[in-house]
Length: 165
Image (cartoon, rainbow, N blue to C red; front, side, top):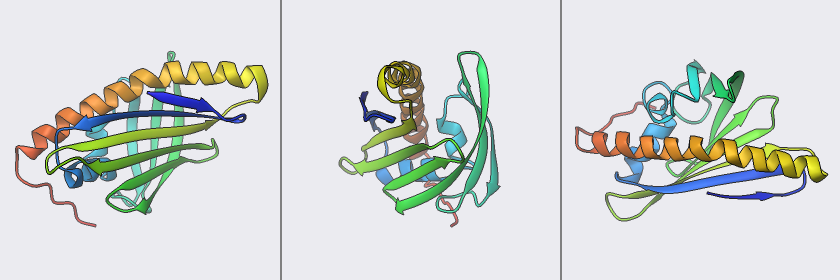
């Protein structure tokens, strides 16, 4: 987990190796109907609804995120700046951008990074917000990457995943 505070934003990143081929891992991340709901920790994310699309670029989702006992409803638009490698979720009206990067490490392992950029206040308040955001997101990312590893590894032992685009 690493992070920086660039004045009016905080960036939080986590990365891990996943025991599955890169195409399998990316398919899980990009499929918001069947794959993505299986890799986000249910204790933090609830009620993921696909409003448009469902796989990759052009998908629109709504979801709830639970933190500190409060539930926040959000809506995100999905883009794929580098299909098969980079997927971006932009949360409407909140300035929150989460990027998933998938890099092959051999034939059956993949390095995945999750990077989120969030707006904060400037100055001491922003620094405090940055500390809080890092403390809150660290367990979310740790759980998400561990769940992604388990699901992708189990799926890799089964038949190939076919996703229609």
